[in-house]
Length: 432
Ligand code: GKR
Ligand code: MG
Image (tube, rainbow, N blue to C red; front, side):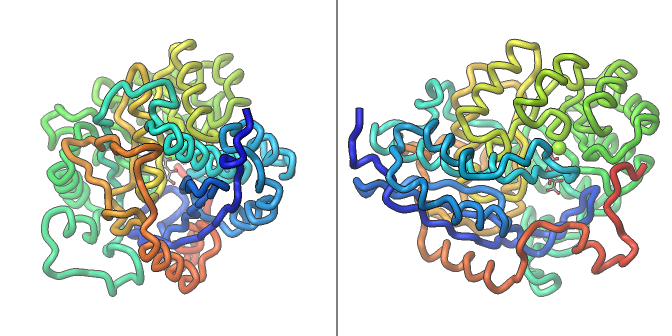
């Protein structure tokens, strides 16, 4: 049934730069700003749907290039919209790339368009996006504390952003966390502030003989009561994985991407008695046959920006349940629209396996009305309004767009950022 008021009238694409602290990972350090793209899709009927995806000049240009071909399409027919996106963009992207984050443009644009359409559908039907994903199973969606080794600073222009009055999480957010005591202090401040019930440490920067004992020290600092995850983003060789993963036996909820590729994950999995999770070796539907064949992981960490949207994330969940995989969600530096979208997934899952990842506490700004979404008792409360339940604050959006124009960044490049501090630093596939 066609209703012309549901046809797309305009798509506004706004690249933004958000303040991001100098967090460390296997490819380097976060730049002072992380890039995101905000989409506002408006229908002929005047309803606006929003979405947020990782920022990158190429992604922005690709959306702008195909935008006109999406005008006039019906938001109640998202599959046709995605088909049009796929038709218009080159199919060269089987591979997600070797970085900890996914670099495929088409899946990002699928996600951007699909989430905005679902937001509009919710507003038109006066229901929440979670209802459109099968129904709201819970109102509180649990997330995990996400720890990072980091240099001193809270993002923006390094060194100019320190608040000498800061206390608690605000102080930890800007503090250096390199030493064992530093990372434990970060864990304590984060859990105290947000009430998290599980912890993930992002590793891969330092060698395993520092990071593995640090992870166990955090576990001990919480009296072994806090489920822990550790993620070196596949920077270990298989030999290193076999040696060090054994140290975690009985102590980790899961070990995330210790080694690179499904074959290596599968070999390691046979050697160590510890659940393995991935957001690096099984990252698209085309990876699933390989995953099933070699059993590369126990838990698949989806990311709706990389799996093509919320409905495909629900499809992945179903496949996970069918083939005995656990399910959770991966994250990158992001704002409240992405957090809300993740919360709707979490609300709709029939069975909730593992607290979702989120970088959200590391961010200090937002583009949504009312400012940052609260995380309490480790949970986000599902927004109560129709659609995603969040609205853009135009002034906040404009401010972060100006940041984007001023900062000069066009893509995420943690290697280049690290080279400013250590000119000899290089991204490698296997470092340890
Ligand atoms: O933000 O530095 C980071 C992370 O390393 C991120 O890019 C990863 O994609 O957090 C992610 C992960 O779980 O692999
Ligand atoms: Mg990961």
